[in-house]
Structure formats: C-alpha cells, structure tokens
Length: 280
Image (cartoon, rainbow, N blue to C red; front, top):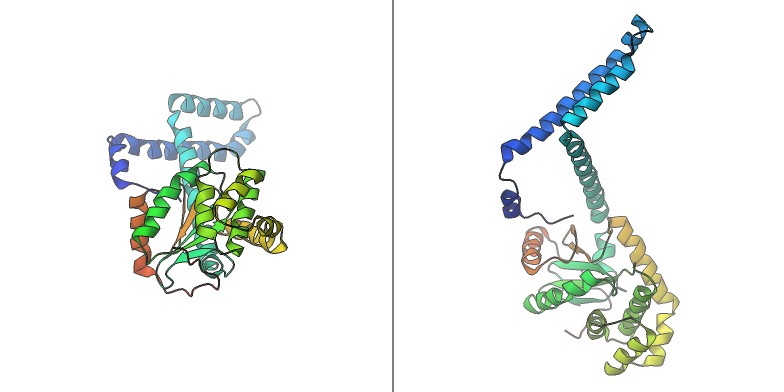
C-alpha cells in the first residue's frame, strides 16, 4: 500500500477538468473499438471486396495518433484495478494471519502487550530499512505502549541472510535489540568478521553465536518469515503491519503516528509472546 497525501494530491491536480477528459476519451475509444469489432462479421458477409478489418485498423490507428493519452489512461486504470485487487487479497490474508504476525513466540519483540502492535519485515542489507531505523527507535522511545515485532526477511543476497542469522542467534543469548540496532547502523559489507566485532562489543559468546546461526531453529524461523511475508503480500523491505494494515516503505514519523492512531481505534489486546525482549 502506498501512503497517500491528500494535500499533495490537490497540489498535483490543478487542472481537474482537463484530467477528467482523459477517462472520457478512453471510454469513447473503447466504445469505438468494440463497435467496429462488432461490425466485423456483418461486414465480412456483405462482400469480400470490402476491406473491413484494414479500414477498422486504420481508424483505430488514427484515433490513437490523435489521442495518445487514451493509451496512458487505459494503462493507468488497469494498474489501479490491479493494485486494488492486490490490496483486497492482502487484507484477507492479513486478517487470517494476525496471530502468526503478532504472537509468534519465536519472533523477537519489544514493548507492552495489550496495545497496538507493529510488525516489521526488514533486511539488514536494505538501505531503506536503515533509513527507517532512526524513526523506529524514536517511535519506541516515545510510545512505551507500542509493541514492536521484528521479522527478519532477508531478500537481498548472502549478506542479508548472514545478518539475519546473526540477529536471531543474538536473540538466543538475550541480546537482540542492541545487536539489531548495531547491525542496522553497520557501515560497509556485512561479513562474519564485522558480525564478530559487533558481538564482541555486545559481550556475546561468539562461539555460541556462530553455532546458533547455523541451527535448524534459526533456519526454520527464516523460512517461516519468508512464507508468512509472501502470504500477506510483502513485496519489499521494509514493510510494516500496523494493526491490521500493511504499509511498505521507509515511512516517516507523522505517517507512523497517523497509522497508530487509526489502529488504536480498532485494535484488540494481543497476548505477549513467550520470548519478549527485556532490554528496552
């Protein structure tokens, strides 16, 4: 879902009457095409000498050349219908997956249970995820009533997977949040050496971290996150489920605040998972 700014919409549409002409032209074009196509059988029966199809094709071609905007408008309408259908499918999937999203005991989480829950699908190698991290940290500091669930969703290659494994392995040692934030602010390539350096600064057991990174449990969590993300319509990182709404992109603080307020109006309490982060 893209976040829509009504003010920006108004500023970008000063000539409303001109823009409204495009749908009408597109409709007229479609009516003309279908009308001519409907005439084809009759035209074919009248005489073989009448070049019905070439004539129709010429008329359509001339119309398109005179009104090229109808092609753009038709494509825009198609994309809008496609996006609407995808949004409806995502909503249905979300409504049936809220427990898996919000209450998975193996997903790292922080904050207070019983209020609005935000779920983030993220990739440590994603620039937009890194950009959003500062906003998220301030959000958590300003809203102790918000519960935040972390879903590692590595989609950008081996470095992404390596970092996700390390994050979940740190969670096994009870040091997820600080290690997560350190990984998000890491500059340069994500290598095992870089991860080992961060682990040392966090006081983690490096030998255990490496072992847990390769464990079946960590791999199962990543596989489950992958399946769940695709099920509910996650197509990019970061993606957030706020209440029961899926939002993609590095959204800003005002947008977070608005979506949280909307979620509070229709939220129901959610049980806390078994493994809650206690660092905050």
